[in-house]
Amino acid sequence: MARMLLLHLYIRDDDDSQELARSVHGGFLFESWMALLRSGQVYDARITALKHPELDHFSSILLSTTYDGAPNTYHQFFYEKLGFFFISLALVAKKPPFTFANLTPKQQAAFIACKDALKKCQGATSPGAFVEAMGAFSASLPVFSAAMAEDDNLKRQRVIAETKFELFSKFVNENDLLYSVGSPPEPGASATHDLRVPPPITGRSNFLNPALPEGPFPLTLPGK
Image 1 (spheres, rainbow, N blue to C red):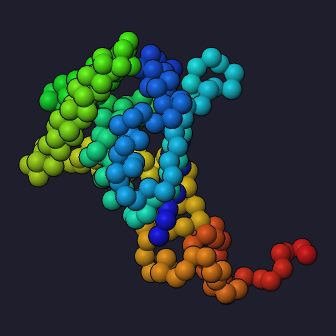
Image 2: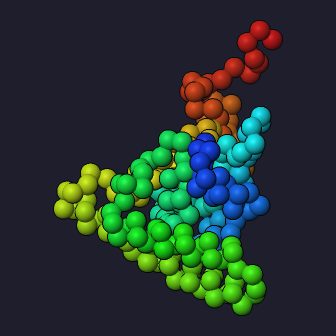
């Protein structure tokens, strides 16, 4: 079952938040784009930053993707492959799932290393310098993902109640404008029929507003 994600994050107006917004305003960075291509489950993806309607700064970031599978599996893939970008998004949100201080010292160091490497990519003044900087940045990403994966052990040891990934996944669902609109949160029994075929008048489609009562539905609208 193909699903859509429309993630809308209100961000702060501090320097770090605005810098991240500027970096995604024109679309995905190279590493993000390559991960989308390698995923094998993404049909389309767009990202941009939205300007405040009255003030001279970015007020939110909008990410839209169409993909196959369950949301949790989708979140897990990109959290592992592009954890730095998604943690960056989470940290600049006005209502973040966690703060930089909630990261372990190892996670903080790995995050800073990724951030510094990315700045060198953006500041490269020649093709050779860019290729070298991009190589260093690419090498820093799995190191960061490995540091974030330590949360699994911390949870098993009951040092923390939830991993950063669990907090992040909830955060994505809460800010996904389409998560609970018109289709079930997870593929299941209600998604086993062909979605291209309209349901019978007494049936229920995945696309119907979940706030509507169960059928049968009237053939004419009230008052008509």
